[in-house]
Length: 259
Ligand SMILES: Nc1ncnc2c1ncn2[C@@H]1O[C@H](COP(=O)(O)OP(=O)(O)OP(=O)(O)O)[C@@H](O)[C@H]1O
Ligand SMILES: [Mg+2]
Image (cartoon, rainbow, N blue to C red):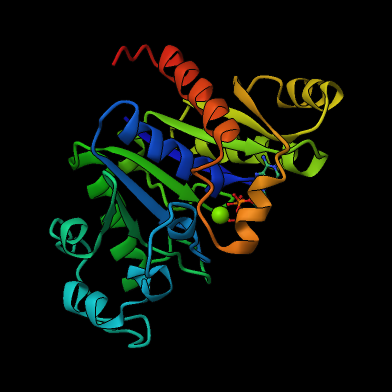
């Protein structure tokens, strides 16, 4: 199963990605590859990985990008390889904890992930490899778009989960992401509502998300920002984990997955 998580900034993508990755490993006993493809990566903290402050996003490893593609974007006009070898990198550069292997890819801030520069090509090759050739369960924490997913890798993605909080902007962005996904041929899009404080907010999201099937809702939970302040993992919060278990069950039903 390969899942990508997207949504407006701050809606809870990283929280959901960490909880899902952990549960696939611990409840289902699967090997899990957690991918952080955010320009400001922090999935390592959410997963409680020690030494997270020393992790360098792969896309910022200039030497590596140059070694694999033959250039970096600073060398304007230089030729570079369009399909660099990346298959060894999950093992070499991933950090493992409790059955979850984390790969911090990072993102390209200018020009988007689809940019025709060495870093863009490197990132896309890495994502294609992860989605199309690896047999682990993949949970990818992405930014508010689908730039990372090209037409090739979309074929391997089982579900794009758009996280939304009960605000109009967040719902509008969810629909924009769904449209962008559909433009590249990804139609398996679901939503998760987060930070819910009452039934009105749930109704608002159900109505607003309209044709995007909702896998479930996560309650507003003060323990989550508290963990953020302390820099600790959110995985110890029983309520969050129970709610995310429900979301995974629903996702499996939607995708007709039995194990
Ligand atoms: N259910 C919740 N209840 C209360 N606060 C939450 C909840 N989920 C997430 N948060 C808080 O919302 C903020 C954003 O959460 P998170 O980092 O998971 O979102 P994100 O979508 O990954 O953000 P970004 O776009 O910055 O990567 C954090 O401060 C987090 O503590
Ligand atoms: Mg995040």
